[in-house]
Length: 477
Ligand SMILES: [Zn+2]
View (cartoon, rainbow, N blue to C red):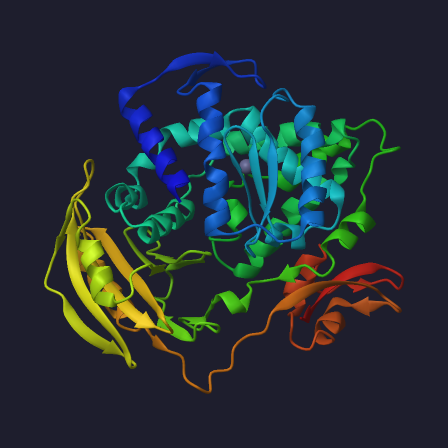
């Protein structure tokens, strides 16, 4: 996670030292304030690749990786910035999301692949992300806001231990900034053009945004899918992308490639991999390591490869769990308190459901920004020492310190009779007879609900699909 650290350092430095200049935007042709050179831009982006890989992981399917890369690469090579070191990665994350780092590093989650139904839809999403790079939205984004965030403050001061650094990387991902709505409209429009230059049927693109609307409606909250958290809906997105598609003079020869796409994603893991731990009914459960802890309701939750991260909804407090190198809680606590800028309160030995630990409060003073207060627990369980740390700004600690403390102290082994979730996979099947989505969901044996299955297939829940149609369903692995 040193990658993330250096990006943060770079953006903080450029914010203050001001390496500025004006450059012409290659896509819009307009002169634009540019804080970084192209080589700096590439460096910023390239360092994100190992950071994303360590925090979320890449899907271990070379055929799928190469399929996505091939589609992205042909659009990128035909774009205004063909010389960038373009890379495309499928991230092992069930969230519906796609994101771009500066310099041409594009990521799509297996979660977003699962809800798409054609190669043309995928081309639309990749085209949109490529556009954020070619129009230099992601550079502008990274040059401006990162330094102001709590997660970055924490990352800047708590940097000595690799394990903590990994946690900090997770935080940086959790609090990624949004694009502006005007940038979103521009990326949609440029993405439409990129897809069309590669002869993709752009009438598929509005379907992706329709799916995002369905996911938002199903989740019943403003939070919606992850994609909308970083790519805010500029409004009338389905209608706008449909209107652009309507301007295409002839659809003859345009590719949808629905069958090819479905074949490629058949068998892909669906949803969270429960073996890596999951959130359920106000708890985090880890089946392989057999531990659990409580999760405050309404907090944001992220389960990454190297850390589990909980975020207070307004970004005022965070909690992270990760493994550390030390062989005892006491040694881990000693390493923690040796970090620069950390002042520890007195440590207390505790036992959490039989697992021995040591817990202490601390304050930390970053070089820039506000002082933070926190509590850290080192606990030994299943042959590993875990660091469970929560913190807030000094002012925020009064409101959130109690919650942090009760979450840390809720860590314990799972009950011996705990029944864990099973892994699920996408199955592409050809319907023998006309089948309603509800029936198809019933046949999954509880692996998926009607509404979620409708979203996967890009239809409404009350639809009956015709005989002979290839559709997605979900089964237990
Ligand atoms: Zn976007």
